[in-house]
Amino acid sequence: LAVEAGVTLGWAEFVGDSGAVVGIDRFGASAPGAEVAERLGLTVEAVVAKAVEIMGERS
Image (cartoon, rainbow, N blue to C red; front, side, top):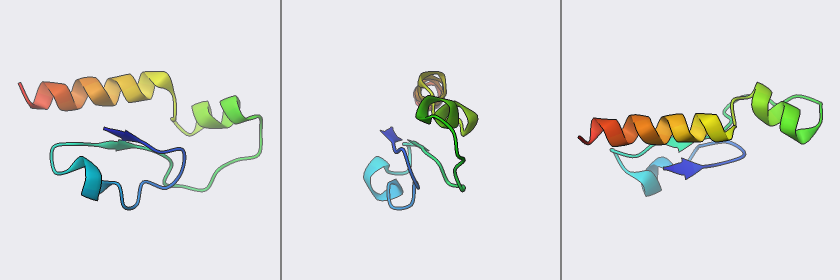
């Protein structure tokens, strides 16, 4: 699992076919950093959810 506070392009090479990347693949917004991160889905909850998802796929 890779977490990128920007474009996820290129991370697939490192996480492999069974991995995943949490990042921002769209244009950002103008607001305080924490608000933008939440609005764009870059949160602790999103990272944990993606980790649980990919770990469940391996079971």
